[in-house]
Length: 318
Image (cartoon, rainbow, N blue to C red; front, side, top):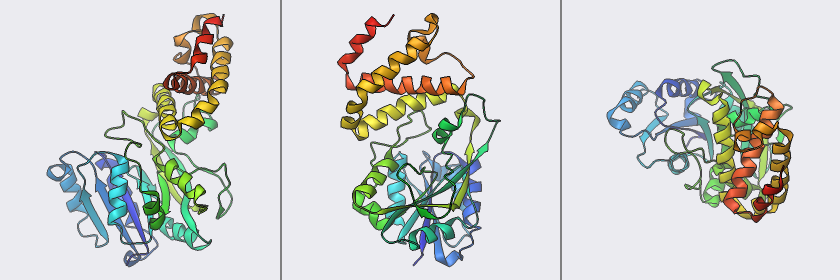
């Protein structure tokens, strides 16, 4: 039986997938100590490039390549979890490259503390194009950059993990019921629903399992140029509001008055020409102002989803 299972869920990303797989075949653990599961969610993959990719790695004894026809990242992750033959499961994005010691350090995270439910690690960006000036440090988490510094430890309450590099005890995933298939991304990424990991993490917190951060369990993650666009971040903000509302509507509703104040303050801070819907979409190089614009988009989406009657007060904004 393997000590740990590394799972990559993929959708029509064979150019980057191959690099991710190779990083898993070069781990410091002996191949007998871990298994690799590839869950290919690409339509008709078994008759196309997926079949070619599977054949390329057919000589890797600890690798299993699976074609999964039901769409959705959450479903693919659940399929990988059910197939895993170990007690620990590490999820790696198909556009990430694991450091050679990744799985060894993940295991240290689980074995260094009692009752560990999840281990997260550092995610360093591979910028496909230079980082834009409008992308401030407060926003890089949107492209899964994670760097909390320090050493192996129980994670602080404000230290979050990202799905590009996250590992779970299999029994915890099973107890939580797996990933919600009504959350998470589907297909090519037009629908940016998220929070499937957050739902599991909230279960872990409520169940008193430990969350561990090990910076040495690190991966490099591609930040593609199509994500380094203001319009992608605006869509991301709106979909995050929808995801948060779906996950915990009562929590969002409690925050609505503050969101409304933030929204009005944002509009009032702009030149008169932008004190309308255009204020949510105008171009700026100022990272602080762009961050505020995104928070206004998030607020506007949440307020609309909730049908908040306080929105009527906006007619009084001059």
